[in-house]
Image (cartoon, rainbow, N blue to C red; front, side):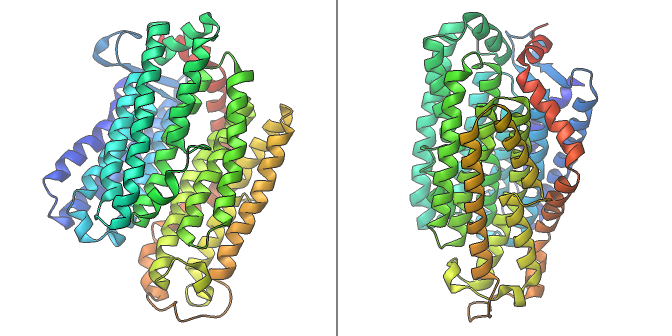
Length: 495
């Protein structure tokens, strides 16, 4: 059964390699990619079921039968397999949106191959139980993203992707520095063994310095304040499908790594490390929403919403309680769904109007009602309006914060939520309300429907996660309990 953990990154790696040989055959590429995307999603759902049914709620694979901590270990616990499921869902809907929107000129430059290589790195990062292999999968993800972000070779893409590459190279260099110091201090890079040894060493002195290095590394990759400066313009240049893929997955890999390391390894001095994380969460919320409010380009507004929502996703880790962490896990799941839907809709809006400036749009609700109401539902879910999924994630975060006496971060979260509501309503009122103007001529309502097909299941899912919040929360509370009980993780891997 443990061999199941190889498939989520082995399958996309093989598919990506096969697609290289069919780069000029667009129809065949789409058939192979679509079939593989469906298979990966179905398999990921099966993997979640298998893990949930096991007694330990965890399965492990010791590669080559080398016992941990000496060999490579893959770990599928409730959080990691949930993240694999969500990345597979995001990959699937992005594929079908790409079939309708990506130009053949981009397809022939190995778009689908590097799409699957990106999923290889993302899923591998979620499943690895070793810090060095986490670095390896990070690099697989980043190399693939370098190709995708520059795919098409437009001037703005090449200019802004340079900043993206430099920032990630710096973060990767610090990752290696942190890993080297950690190995020199503890003698291991296996995460379970690290958790065990750091606990016995009481995380003093140099271990706190190493913790800050990893906070910098994962904060840069996850777009925490003040390390998010590379993200807004880097994500603006590529097509909507690539921005959606990056916004849903790349920052989540950084946040997942932050949650994993600061619940399993650097968990002995929360009054120091987690207080810093809580401060950064609040500042990320504030600066992200201010960035969104300062922009009139619809794509830039949603990009800054990525940053603002990162603050909510990491708030539970800073509060450091089971209920707050459950809220973070739930919110990450919700955000991956809603953010992809919003970027898809924004891409369609720009195609319909021929502009990204919300001041030049008006009246789309009359000409494209389905587009308007799908945007409205996604926007309200992002903000946290009940009974949509965003509400229950924020509710758990607020309750967790109040339980721990963290009243300031709760106040910040509520105020930022109101500002997010204003930001999204500003888009709706400018773009969809009012009288039709001359910009709404490029695509008819009927022509936009094929583009909306990948959006509809995402909107249905955010409604379902809201209406069915109780069973969903049972799962994420189980995941949060595992995170807050690192001894269980350690004992399963190092019996």
